[in-house]
Length: 220
Image (cartoon, rainbow, N blue to C red; front, side, top):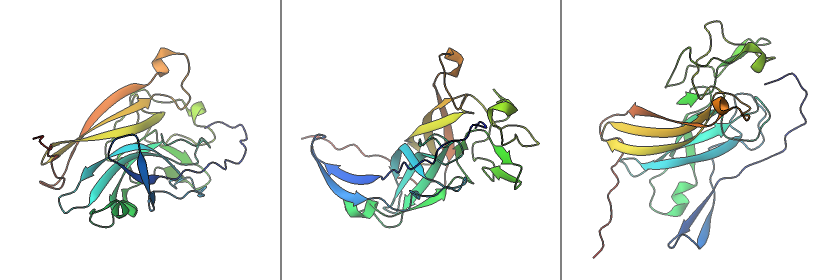
């Protein structure tokens, strides 16, 4: 974040559910609800959504790992943190994918860009440490997040300290989910190759059997 005044950002995003049998023709099932607030300007709100991936939960619901963004830098992209949500209902048809609730959101993210503090609060963004927490690597300068300031304990940072997005979740075994994601070490990538996108990976431990394995369909 910098000190330059920015115009009001009126961009909105809507995630829609669609079905296809051939990858070319799609049938719209409607807009998904519960993942974000299209109009929020709260610095802790989820306004913009990025890409992500779903895993089937053992009880028939689905879980979604997704990139998301807020109004911290007025940029309408989902690259500030990685969140996780679940469907409200068992998924038997496309309409069951329309209602979601966020489990890991902005203030308790799975992974996040650098933590900053609003001195007017004071208030930390995010409020709690990410589930995957990395300390002391590639720390941003205070001038790069002004007028917010770094927390007293320092940054929680790595190559994804500026941007983190596009989580792809892979069922690994009954207790493990592997997440592959993209990130930058700066909020504003430049021609410097050190600022260029990097690909990272981490693994989450889950209760045994929480996610269902993917079963490939055989062809006769």
